[in-house]
Image (tube, rainbow, N blue to C red; front, side, top):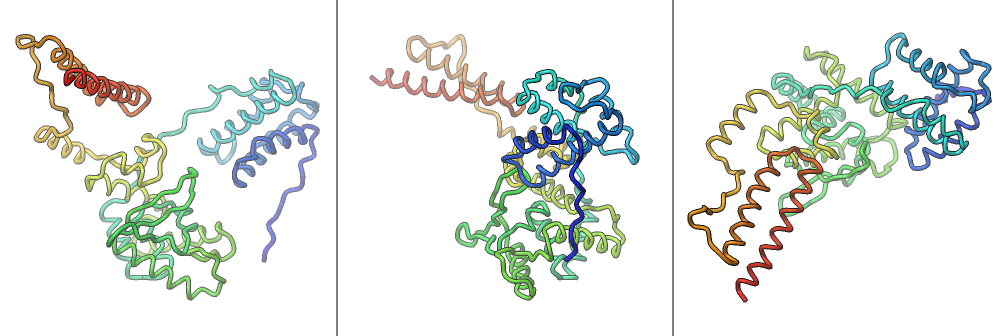
Length: 380
């Protein structure tokens, strides 16, 4: 087996202090996150040693020129670094500086990098495949009917990430009821696991992948897909396969596996599934993240608009109260509370999903309980 090349330890007076800070911060992080922390720290210290060799202690670090100089060099990198890469490095180094400020009792280190130094995350548009691309690609994968082809069909019809598919267990297919099945997706990128309902076609795909696993010479390890050496090697093999398939059928060769996840989310939304259900199906933790995946076109908006105009099923019925027929006593109090609850609900539904909407929902529940108690008084 080819050994992985490792860089020699960094020889810098500040290296031990930074390494201790990384070790403290990465206690509960994954190995890949820990490597990212160490790589960012190494990048900063290499710059510091080259440009400012006289800096040998934490007390000598300054925002200008040390931190700002490192930021300028990173932005001037050739070829240019992706915005997401710059953001990740700045967030990591800022966290390390905060840890060093706490452990070394030097509060000024925490201000070497500021919140406003971190640029905003670019808002990428959803990238689902077009209907023609999706149909052509699925036809080719079905015709090939090999291991990798079935893997990509599974991705397309479940919305899984490719890394989650590589971690699927051999018994990932679970029965949830009579003629009902779901795939158990293990802990993924956001440290969440979920059950994805599937149809008979996906059940058949899983059976095919089990058959290919039984033919693999590698010993059984409980995984649905055999890793040739490491998980990274398996993912690279799958990506190369998709590239060759797209090239053979005349599709753009820059299509990536993650676009199948975008296509799945968009398909589910257009099929009538609610936004919250799509969010749960994709394993997202925030609506903003889901909005990056689903493609809502003008045709979709027009359809929903016409449906809302013809069948306003989401509107709560307005209480039948008027000033001319206002009642007194407990009956009038109940009418007023019902009217208040209606106005509150209409206002709550006009707000975006967030803290304010949740608080109004809790207040509406309290009004419901108050109404129940008042009705008891009325009965008594």
